[in-house]
Image 1 (tube, helix red, strand yellow):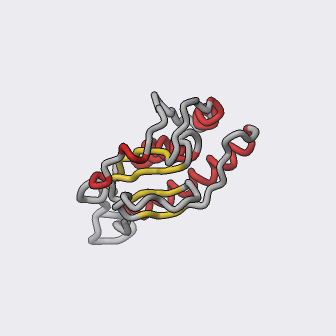
Image 2: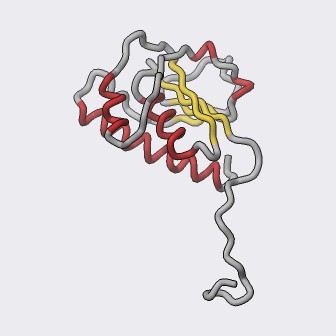
Length: 151
């Protein structure tokens, strides 16, 4: 019994029941914003979601600043390689988070949520950190919504 509320036992927090939510993060190049969101979601929400990312027009180069900014937060981007949006099986997505600033193609059949996060590509390190701060805050709120059964 809890010493604060007689007759009520304290229970450990339980993860939400039901299947994991499959979330796809999309930006233009799958180089900065969507990989940041994917990595942050994997680190903080792996108990409730499966995160992936893709790009509307993916890049063929890497953005080392993206990796560096994530490592400053002890978040590893792993072996991320930019991927095409066309390669995604949307029957395997519960939510698409669009950070591209563009309307997504009609073949995107999953529910879409737009996040207006400015693209840091080509900017100085502080711009990447600001984008990562914004994305981290949004990812944490998304994880809370999933944990509360609102998605």
